[in-house]
Image 1 (cartoon, rainbow, N blue to C red):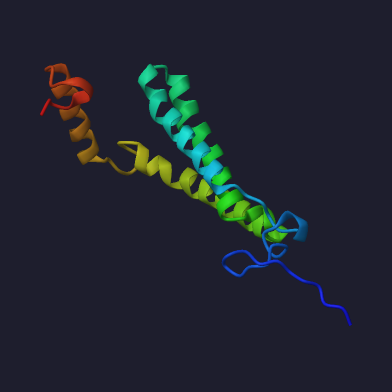
Image 2 (cartoon, one colour):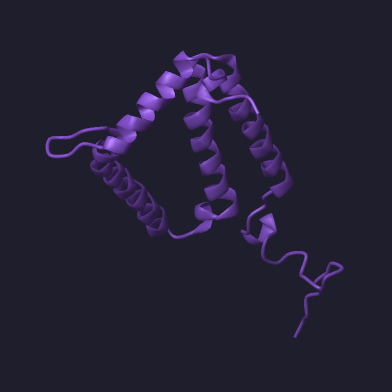
Length: 143
């Protein structure tokens, strides 16, 4: 009977065990992913300062989708899970979209067929009047 010697790191883990590419584990550089996420955060914060609506939308939503993908793939390890987990995630995101599509007409409008959002209309009128009176940039007074 032969015994195979395993080398251990300073924490007592096998060097050829879970997490090593040789054992079929994953080899993720979390610091590199964190750096990429930080760089994308800087781009998404800086994008709106250009004042171009298309750039703002791309930096706000496009980069948010990329960051969500990186987090799900690398930190939630969805690429290592069984296939049905990914299908469940896609189903939940689709249902969230259906919920948003169903609720947004009531939330984003000031009136409907059988209702009126008086508070939203009053706040909009107040903010427009304040902006017309020169109440500061973006309708906020300087502190």
